[in-house]
Image 1 (spheres, chains in turn cyan, yellow):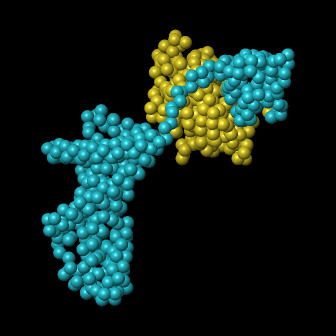
Image 2: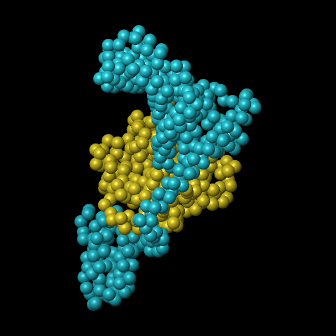
Length: 377
Length: 258
């Protein structure tokens, strides 16, 4: 069925005689395009041409368009081209093709050098817009909290408890496991190096201060950003895409009140709890490591720990935690509500949410460390 | 393909489909003739979309046979099944355009995957197809989220037609369009069916579409085809559901308009 020559060229009375045959269909379109371009390239300027379509077995849109392209190509080379012998039932199709691609979309000129600068400019602009959006969200949350404080009945307590369950309670196993391992690893490294100075015992000081002030809260915040921040963005994003957010607005409800506030508060409650559990697990890991690897008995470890750390070290970690939760929630909400119509945009915003919240969490940790150092805590 | 009754493109016999314990289609038989526009109607939940999705292989059947040009795609080996699948184009109810691709890329996608074509030809064909469904060239770099409902359906139709199918399945093509847009879309389906020689299987609720474009109508109910035939047959039917559907208040208005 695929037999038959697609296009044959001959000269007759100073005119080009083209004879088409076989299947002028999508399957043969690539081949056909090559033949047609060849005919147009070899065509003598000014000579007329006849295209005999009588032996074509089948013609579809691809074939009809290529015929039209052949006619236009020959016409552009100066001669007029006539289509003869076209079966009647293909006339409609060919007429359709004649109207196609008359005015293509205006070609946009590419400036690769300028485009590189434009990308930098856009990114800088985006950083500014991101900061404004975060500030805006923070403001909206404060306003929502104010409204809710005036009318406590409207607060979505059930929703918040549900979110605490999802973002806090269900994160406990993984948080415990990872902080336990980190505690053990820090202790092992400390023991290995401190032993060279005979300062084994100071490992406990280092672990205690490091874990309580920084490691527990940072690890927990990063894990929660990856685990719950992303799911929060994806949830809000899918709701934006399916116009659920708009539906809420039309019912006179503020999505910030209904969706964002419970999530952000849940994160602000869950993070200190997880930080506390994480710190305990890390200290436990360190203690086990000191005992099994360093030969330091648990009594010695605990005794030294009691001397090395104060309530302030413990408090610093826990004071930082709710702010981390707040910032993770704010970023997740900003990104989630910024999702546009496409699936790709949802994916990009979810990634943005995780990357940005981890960055901001670390930045905030640094700023708070400076603050606590300044007030002598 | 010279068997008896080669005018039948899709032959469905004794089809049974169910979800869990609930049967949706029970012993349904239906023929789709070459070159016709078949309208499938039925109450919500009667299994119109399920029938369509079963024919195109998205839903598993429990019993019965489905033949497309004499081949049962579900039983055929991979290569033959793909060849059969290339013979049909599907317009989903909500368009199902790929949201991360532009309109042009959406239309080009099936061609890119199945044919070896130059970039220039791909662009030209995509524009030609968009022109055929009545869209201006400047939509081609838009994303699906920027399109109106009617435009989405047109782009989806252009994509369904990308590989020159001989059968087109349309799931509620005019739902969500205003009456003028719906009438235009009906007209478009009619024109394309004539120019391209298509066979059209159309699930619809739209009485205007049934009057304006369908050659034959099949009414689904109780898991099978209650009645089939031309619009005149429908109007003459005494089956209570068919009667209330085609001779109800809204139906009279549609009939007067047509």
